[in-house]
Length: 257
Image 1: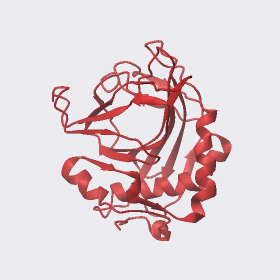
Image 2: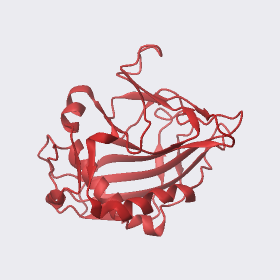
Image 3: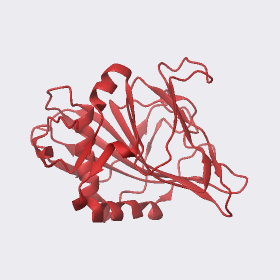
Image 4: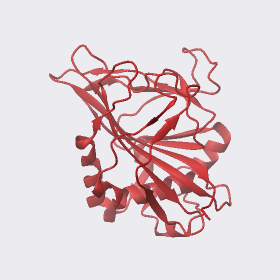
């Protein structure tokens, strides 16, 4: 089990993984980790169940420049002290991407619906944040502070109307690191992840192709990786479908005075 961490608080090891995510990030700039590689302490069962219910209480994304109404989300921002491991919520935070990074929805401060009151203190979420940052920095002896964005996202597909997880197309994120965990797939096809090394590879030649199928199928990447996700469409059953993901981004932050 790999669980190296610069944060002493994470000695409890309530989440572990049978993969060296940090080395994969250093060598390949991304890591694909199937759900069966993760282990969770039974102590997290209750908070994990409550956390997954959050996706039934997301709010419509009001910033879709293409007029799409297929995305719902909530957002919250935390500061993590690299020296103490203290995780602190920053209320009222907005999310910004430049036009160069997100030509569709970038160039403005986006104020999404905030994380729910119970979510902010959810133990599973806190342990997962600490676990993820430990993996991403596992080969570095650093004590940086981090700003950590938490995005709860649902993409919806209805009959004849697909949902697009990445309406901006092939793109890269500008945060130092990003992790994405599948929460749920329901009555859909599509939703295939494509990873490109430098954004110049043709669409028929990505470095990796992966469709997340099971709860907690996850991937991690740094800011150099270009990527996209194919649209989702309704499956064989009547009614709509959805794809729920948790996206966590990590940016180094100057230590507060």
